[in-house]
Every structure is written in C-alpha cells, then in structure tokens.
Length: 325
Image (cartoon, rainbow, N blue to C red):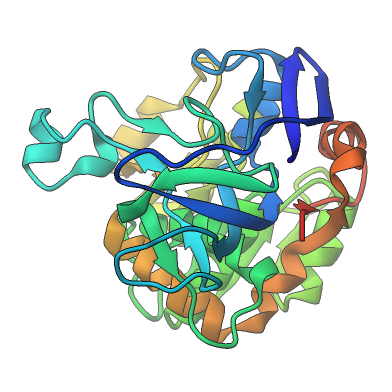
C-alpha cells in the first residue's frame, strides 16, 4: 500500500509498505482522506516528544470498513476516534478517559491514517451519517476538539465571544459556537488569507496588527497558542469573564496574572474530547456543509512534502488533506 511516512525532521515521503493485518479487536479501514493537524506539524518539525520515525502519521481521517466488523458491513463510511487509553488509571476509571494518564493517539504512538489502509481498535470506529462526504468525515476529529472547548467553556446564548486564531481549530470553534446559538463571535487573526476565510464563513474579524482590540467579551477562546496572544486575552475579556485555552503551548508563556486577579477571571484548560463530543461532531458535520469550506487543499500522497510546507511557510492553507481513494 501507499503510505506517507515521517522519516525525520522536515522529511516526509510517500512510500510503499505492507498493508497492516488486523489483530484481535481491530478492524481494517481503507482510508479516503487524512488531514494534517498541528500535532503533525510538530512531528514534522522533529519536536514531538513521543513520535518516532519511521511513522505513518495521521489522526484525522475517514474511510470505509475493509475487514470483518461485529456490527458494520464492509464498505460502511466511517471515521475513527484516535484516542488510545489505558483503561486502568484513575481518570479512566472515573469516566474521564480523554485525560488518561497514559493517553496515546493513533498516528502519533502507532501508525495512523496517512496511508491507503490502517488497522484500528474496532471500538474506536464511528460510522458517518448517510450523506456525509468522506472529506467531511476527516474533519470530525478537529470539530470534536471545538465541541469539547465550547461545552467546557460553558458558552451561553447571548454571550459575546472572541476567538483567537483562524486556523482549523479556531474556525471550527467559531462555527461550533454559531451552531450552539452564538451570533456575536469575533475571530482575531494576523494572516490575511485566513482573515479572508473567516470572513467568507460569515464572521467579523480583527487583525490586531492593524485594528483596535477594545472588547469586553464574556468568553475568549485561545486557539492560536502564541505568546503574544496569551498576553492579550486578559485585556479583551470582561471582568469575571472566562478564558478557554484550546491551543497547546509548546513553551511556558507569560500570563498577566495580576490583571487576572483584579478582573477575577477564570481560566479553563481543555484537552482533546470526550466520546460524547465526538458523537456530537459527527452530527454537526452532517448538518452543516459549511465546515467543508475549511478544507483549502486536497493533495495526492506523492505531494506529502509540499503539503506540510504549505502549513509551515506563508500560504493561504487552512486545512490540508491527502486523498487516498
């Protein structure tokens, strides 16, 4: 089979590999689409603490069932919840397995979905709803991240919301907020092409390099993960407002804790998603085709290196996917 393999820092390549053989408790998926995530960019840069070359990346993917499944026939369109949990730590035993103390992911700790075939735990397979495209199916995972952020952020209809970052997670968060009833969402971004994408999706935007940032938001979502952003979030949120940290900061960042104290702010940190969030994401992508507008590039596996470069150099790319079918 054809697979995109991380071979070392800034080196990915489409190669021929043996197709995986499902073990007990696994099912083979014939992959249709696989997206590049921010975590994949960390792997590509050679900075991810767990991912080891050679590795087939990809934890955002869709496809069809290609081997025996206890409930679903072959050919069923599916996506996969990529979380791999231990099942024995306290969070797992308390029903909070998304923060498992030994949490691993398909595509990081095991070979993932950037290949023609991938073998995954049968229990991780989630069928797509009838009529959902396979390209949309590969967006379920990032939408689940956004659903988890919005639900944990305790958004209430009528809240004024500011979302920092117009990448995939930022745009998904803004769109999920709209699905949950938000009509006052501002997206903050410095990349002109991503600003255009946010405006195309119907959001008001602010470029902090050019525009005033005088806001009094009820909730601020940090989907950018940039040191300059974390210094701004305490400015734009109201007294006793709520800040939700969605992005993963690679290094410790300076936060204005004194301002946080004076305004009596609350910070909420979120990680991945629960099974319920993933289930809701499947329904959201089925009901709202606008999410597919986030996909800016669909490439062949042979274009792997170029696909990663689109997201690591200035470009108009938001969600880059590889197509295998």
